[in-house]
Image 1 (cartoon, rainbow, N blue to C red):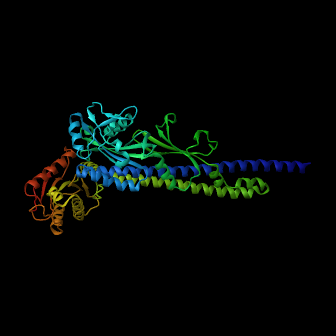
Image 2 (image 1 turned 45 degrees about the horizontal axis):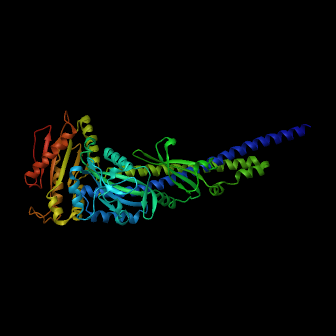
Image 3 (image 1 turned 180 degrees about the horizontal axis):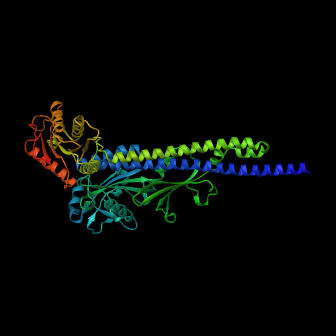
Length: 535
């Protein structure tokens, strides 16, 4: 009797332990698949983000060219567009939309009619027919559109006449950053597509204070993106395809989100019966648009990723202790691998964000720091100098007769000249703490922390141009490219503002220009003022 009781107790305890072990392993397997699937969803989201970012690069490149050359001709716009359309299959159209005051409407239309005789600023009625645009203080006509053959109906359309267009226009104009529209339906070719608009504002110069954005607004560069194509292109670049996807657009609240795209198109994510394993991640947040990717696996995905270890435990109950130990170690190892993979993905995203931050602080033509980085570094070193009572030197370097050089040799040679100038100045700076930045078209800034005298550095820069000359036959002043330098040396900062340093360096630069160019003028603060010059 006792043996039967012991056997029963043994079987009962063994069954309980086996059932507990089975339940634990089943949950662990569910966690592994869920974590693995979440990593797959994040991989898809990263691919979609990368595709969208590559389309946005077209707008940034066009804006940089616009700022550098103070405008875009129709031939330049067409040449730029062809290259991007060849690389980006999801890019439907590129548009240039200038701001036109009502008083300039007739003269603007007359100028464009030299290229397009029937050009008029128009808007569409409720039936989609073109009609004369209503009176408004400002118009935003589509000035250029590529490819023209499939989008010529949009030429002259007042961008602000469409409510969704007007919304993204106002946000871009006010915020000064890249904005994205809600999803819209467009007639393209012989059918209709779902698309979004990327709108990048263009101002009359690169650095604009917040309160001057509206006054200096020139227009919008717009990219029309095919939603289905951008998602399918991203999916083709990733491995897993046995899943149901929904790309959603909206705010952080799930109640007001709009379905942008579903794959396959015939299913509904909310009615899927595989909701135990699902993934969700943010694709991007741009302006007031928040894209979210939701997914559930197909049965074929689960069949491929579920293993037989849990069932094996049930059939080999007499060996459940050894088997359970083996499974436990196996699952923990697999979980650790998944966590490492997720951490690796997170690190790659951090690296991508860091790269984007570096791009925002770098001049794309010359590869050195831009005006934004110059202002940030000046603020940092200004307060360090005042706090630690150390000297500080700020220089402004300007290329002499650069406009004449550009007029004679053309913009491409002008760009090459800018790169050669950067090489010569860089070779004259010896310390890692010295900052060299491009702060204007042909104007550069140098910050030398903890430096008592800027003349040795300025002299090395002038000598570099005399020693390694860049030919310049556009002027009779020496026959080669030279620079003028204005510098200010502050021995001890007391009650002055950092903006005054740049102003003093600018004034010194003007003296160098007025005194014959190819020289340096230095103003010292904290001791008697001196001027040095290189004749």
